[in-house]
Image (cartoon, rainbow, N blue to C red; front, side, top):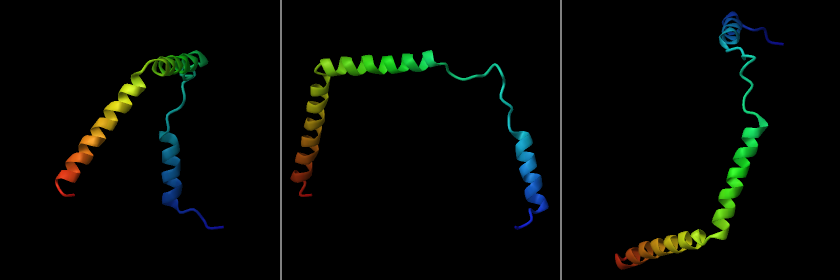
Length: 77
C-alpha cells in the first residue's frame, strides 16, 4: 500500500473541516411539496392533452420548417 504524503493528508483534513455541517432545522422538502409538483404537472399535461394546443404548435413548427426548406432550395443550397 502506498503511503499518503503529508500535503495530501493536510489537504484532505482541511477539506473535511471546511465542509458545512447540516443543521437539524434544515431537513429539505417534505412529501407534500413533491406531491404538489407532481399534481401541478399532471394538471398541465391534462390541459394540454384535452386542448388543441398541441396541434397548433405542430402546425407552427411544420410551417417554420417548410419556410426554411423553401428558402434553402431557392438559394441553390
